[in-house]
Amino acid sequence: MRLTVTTWNINSVRLRIDSVLRFLAETQPDVLCLQETKCPDDAFPLKALRGSGYENVVFAGQKGYNGVAILSRFPLLGREVMAFCERQDARHISAVLGPEAGKAAGIVLHDFYVPAGGDVPDRDSNPKFAHKLDFLADLRAWGERRVSGPAILVGDLNVAPLEHDVWSHKQLLDVVSHTPVETEALETLRGEAGWIDSARLLVPEPEKIYTWWSYRSPDWSAANKGRRLDHAWVSPDLSGTVRDVTVARHARGWERPSDHAPVTLTLDL
Image (cartoon, rainbow, N blue to C red):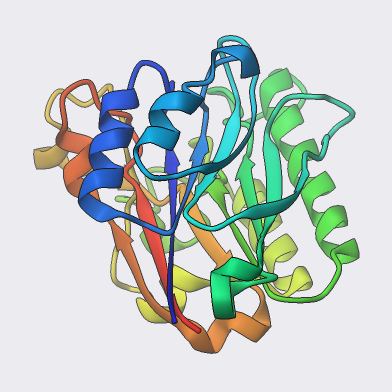
C-alpha cells in the first residue's frame, strides 16, 4: 500500500483556499497537513475542503495567526491538541489513521507549527526567539515521553538544521532559523526521540533542499535563496517504507502564493 502525506504552511487557509483546492485536485495526497491556517475554528473552510474529497478533517485555529489542520481520505481517530510553553497557541494537532486505511491503520500523524522566532537571534533581547527556544525544549521533552509505535511528524518546524538546508551556511549562521542554538536543538530532539529525517534519508548532503523562499526577494525563483523549514519525519519502524519526499516548488510560483512549498512524503507500507 502506498501512503502519501503532504505538509504545507499555507499562510492563511481562507486567503489561499483556491490554491489548497488546486493542489488537492492535482496531487491528491492521502493526507494534507496544514500550518498557519490563521482562522478561528468557526471560520475554517470545512465545507469547501470536504467538497474536494477529503471528508475527514481535524483542525485547531486562532484568529489571525497560527492554526493547524489535518485533511485525510481515511477516517481520523483520537484528535489531540497539545499545549507547549503553557500556551494554547494552536501549534499542534494529531490524529490516528482509522481501520479503513488498511496497512496505514494505526499510524499517528503529528502536525506542528514551531514559532518563527522573530528577527534577532538573542534570547534576552527578543522574547519571540526565547519562546522559540522554549518551544523546542518542550518538544524535546515531549519526544522523550512519546509512546512507541508507527508515527509521522510533519510541519513547519521553522529551523533549517543542516549546512545544505540553506543557500549559504556561512551567511545565515546568525540568521534566525539557522543559528547553531536552533539547529542543535532541533537535531538533538529529533535524534533523542529516534525520528528519521525522511528527506535526508533519501537525499543526503551535500545536495541542497529548500522548501521556503522569502517574500522579500524580488525574484525568488532566480535568486533561489531558499531554506528547508518544512519537515517530514517518521518513527524508526517506518524508516524502511520511505520511498520519496517531493517539494512542489512550482506551487511557490502560483498567484498570491504562500512563501512555503508543499512537501509530500511517500511511504510503501
